Length: 123
Image: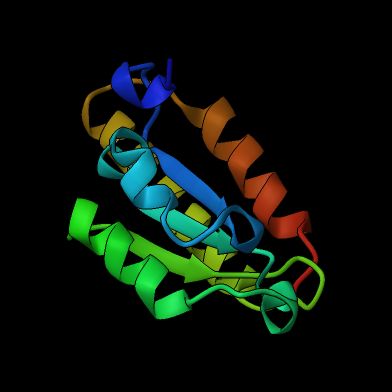
């Protein structure tokens, strides 16, 4: 059972699709992609060695969820990592601002996310 089917109290859901899994994964597991705000298309450094159509994959993901944001990345080459860090930082700030507006102290969560982002290797 996918956690996408349940509200676990998270601020955002994210799907990670490795290019080694095939471009049709959004169609095979639509709940996961419908519930996600972001899809990370991971291991893009392997694309030259695989029979994987990036545009088809992106189209399938948007067919399932037209609003999904997509970041293509590779931890090995660094492609897309700064974009992902920026997305995480934006989400963290939004969560903190919302919590503050509601009178809830999420300082600890915000500071942990901030530490992760500040100490992540920049590409």
